Length: 347
Ligand SMILES: Cc1cc2nc3c(=O)[nH]c(=O)nc-3n(C[C@H](O)[C@H](O)[C@H](O)COP(=O)(O)OP(=O)(O)OC[C@H]3O[C@@H](n4cnc5c(N)ncnc54)[C@H](O)[C@@H]3O)c2cc1C
Figure (cartoon, protein in one colour):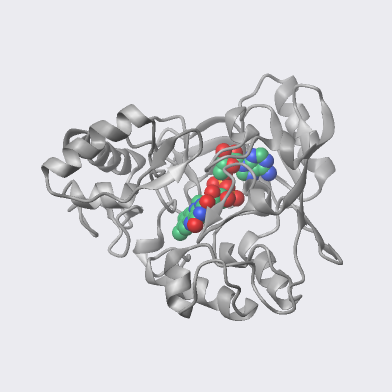
């Protein structure tokens, strides 16, 4: 299916961005590959689109082919799961719970497609897909062939992967997961808020169905489950990643926080780095929930979500994002980095 001068805003959760010169919807892997090959052969820019929940598209739109991945396929063999890239992630998670399998229960309610989950190594509530993905089947545009990348070849790290690092190269077709049959229990709880909710210690397991339901409840309370009637969910989820600071950056940040008599959240990260909380920084820099008086504001439920109140443009949203980034830098010397993928714009 192909449309010319097609609006992209309705295909994103922010409902922002101008039209694509051409929009192609692919329902099979062969259609995906054919569309990518055609765009590449014509030297046409390509935008791969899943659920549009992690995209900020410029008001000028996209001067090329937007390829909407609408493939379907949910195949469970014992504890091995294979999802077609176009499967709706949150629905697939719900089906794993129905099947009594643990491994992705804390990733409930995350919008978007299965094929996008490896791209930024989707994570929440102490779980990330890197923990359960065994293989990613992708079309390699450079080699013009379908490749199967084992987990170790995906270079997964916090909200990052080989696919995000090299966005022009791979189109994800299928994602394979190894789930766990834990007799109706979840994987061990790793996140303090979830442990508190269940009154258990971290590392304990809880009832699988209750874990899924609890995460959906916690997320809904923060506007992190899509609801078309609620503008707090017209977002791209967390707009900034949690900063990961090297020892020198962390020492400088700590000095500024201490000067203001603030105790900043700090979590150990690989290679002697320290991760702190973007939400904490934004809030303490003076941007509370609901901040902003224009058509784009912070969510009333979460400081990390920048939202379209209905009449915003991408430029409105970016102006707010820049104000917050600059405010945090001025207050704490920390540079916030956007999590969503920018198309034709930058912060
Ligand atoms: C309310 C809300 C809550 C959210 N909560 C979370 C959260 O808790 N944790 C989290 O990690 N994220 C969260 N997100 C962000 C987002 O849901 C995820 O990043 C999701 O995986 C994006 O999927 P998508 O299909 O919508 O991708 P899109 O937004 O369509 O695309 C995102 C990027 O992935 C690329 N891409 C998409 N599909 C493919 C493919 N098949 N092959 C290659 N590249 C592809 C696109 O080109 C683009 O660069 C949230 C978003 C919203 C709106």
